[in-house]
Amino acid sequence: MTVTTGLTGLVVAQNPHHTLSVLYGKILRTLQNMPQDAAYRRYTEEIIKERALAVTEEKDIAKLEKRINCGQVEELIVQAENELTLSRKMQAWKPWEPLVSEPPANQWKWPI
Image (cartoon, rainbow, N blue to C red):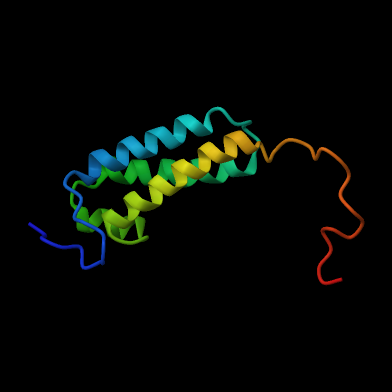
């Protein structure tokens, strides 16, 4: 049994499969409230579904970490918590809706 993550301030997750499954489920439910053609929904949904599948298929934590390839499970949990927060904010912000007014000339031009 691992006693430390080796990462300052990050304690060892006691049940990472369950925690990740719950978080990924919440993210996917939040995304369902967005239009299907919204870029944030499409790309986030693809990544989260892929990770959720990995969590259900890989019971070994080391193999799961290697398969997702984005850090230790404790880091994956932090990432999922952050994504859940962002998805809820995106739902409120509605970036897929049209602009309220026309943008100033050359706003999207870089460099000017």
